[in-house]
Length: 319
Length: 78
View 1 (cartoon, chains in turn green, brown):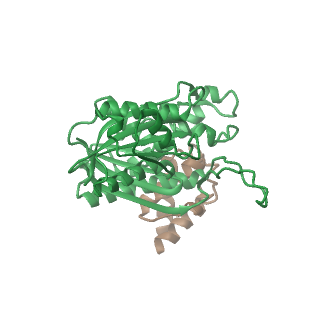
View 2 (tube, rainbow over the protein chains, first blue to last red):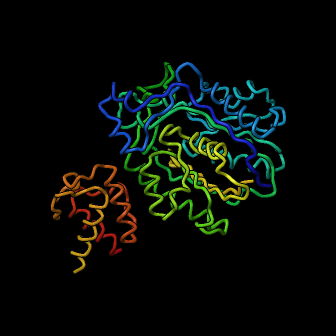
View 3 (cartoon, rainbow over the protein chains, first blue to last red):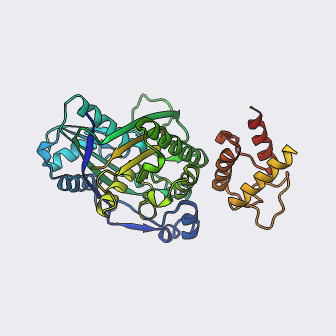
């Protein structure tokens, strides 16, 4: 049994960091960043915690759905930067909103939200859930090297959530894939302080091969969209909204050109939020919902991609 | 002449992706001198894939117009 999304919510940090502010401590400029990435500003965690944001986004999604926390059967949190390695970020959300269902985290980098939808689909299919909360929460600001102008300007922090409900239709196609690559985009795990470990471990700092990720992004968006159309038996022109991972405006533009899409159908949050990893897709969905852009019956194609190199894509009929 | 056609089409793509400007493109012109940075080089590579119906690995990114022509022609022969 598939599902439908019955409520969305998001929460961003208060602190806005503009390109001009970055230019005060990096050798860069607003013009350089905007023309190469499409990003004007991003939100960065200062006084709040990631848990605060994840809980606020979850509460907003539950409220929009009209679903009580105690009616949830599962909480999955997509994150690469949880407040705690354990318990999971999902457990912190459960504690805060007053849910007592199973709660765990999932790590699939920027594609994590779609991977979490796929996990939820399994719970619905096995009849183990009526309501699932999928929340994405990322504090990329603690993973980036703030002296590296090539990477730190790209990312932001935030959280976004969706409440899913079992339904007879809604999910038309789902496809997850991994093209294994440990170097294109990577951040090592915690170093620890074991007296037995030989040699030094690298710091938990994000590194990226820009050209490789750029090419992968464009290629995987295009192939995933075609795959979704073939799987669901719909034409590209039938799709009303495209919600792609927000890594770089020029990746989006290249994919739009290659697929010959109507640019107005490709939703964006990049300019004001940057790349918030797995949060980008549910944040963009929440924006579409709150601006009234999504109508009953609309077809929504979603493609998340990132480190792994993972790709998660799905086609939803909005209801 | 296949070679000049490929060369002309690649030069058009380089220009469309922000390269060249007033620079006269020859086989020896470095892409960087033609105004392509690392990002626009990948965009030109992607445009070439569509133009010639080939797949170019990212590791193979060319440095000069001549390398670009050679790369495209070697992939077209496959």
